Image (cartoon, rainbow, N blue to C red; front, side, top):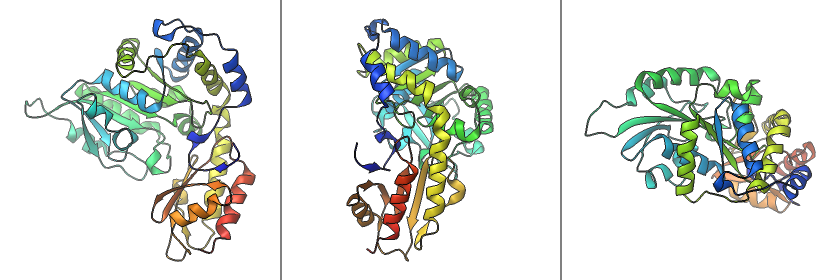
Length: 345
């Protein structure tokens, strides 16, 4: 790829080692449970996260969807952050395909729902109301600068869920970024949730795929749900081979992406007309605002940067997002900063 792409870590492409592993992968029919590389990947992810079993799916959205469908039934309800990915960026799948009602709650600057509001939202057994069944959480929290949420929040939600017989699913699209930022093992950070979906194709650099992990009976149900939504894959070992390397080689280097993002944020904050909330930049995502002193708005700035072969995401009329990843170097960050400093509108 010949562009400098800050739009998302989803644009990362596989390493040479991943491509070589894909070319030589041992394969079988995964719908029959016979792909040895897929089986190895699922077991490795489950062990890493401290769960009983895993399921390879094509995307994080599919992982979240089949998890929700496996946890809840039609007429039941999922408590979820009002700006959570599962609520606003997954095409309403829980409601459209599952008949499961979302109950959105506001989140704070870190992406946390208020614990008292969670408990108050759990419904009594009343035939007029949907049945509260599930609490959906996210870590790191994408809508809040990829903030890594500390484990005590999930421990508190676990207590609430156990008191009311609810399940907890965690959208872990950037879960390894959160674990790295908090200096915790993945298993430590995932211990209080029933299920978790992790993405292999963002900061971990695999070309495609996510893993859903949880108890063995839950994964059996999720496998059925995966088939239901058309997610059964055949010789998927060619993809799983890259996923194995992603799990083995990529989590330890994520702090470098975080350091790059922090440096970018600190330097952006020195440019007149740009505002960055530095205390929220903890992982690999940087949101920044253009104030009235800046000579332009986000869309024209993004277009100007493209002329310098730099791609970035406008997220509002005066807001942009930059995401660091394996293929963003310190030099690329300096090129972005220089281009912004030279922008005249």
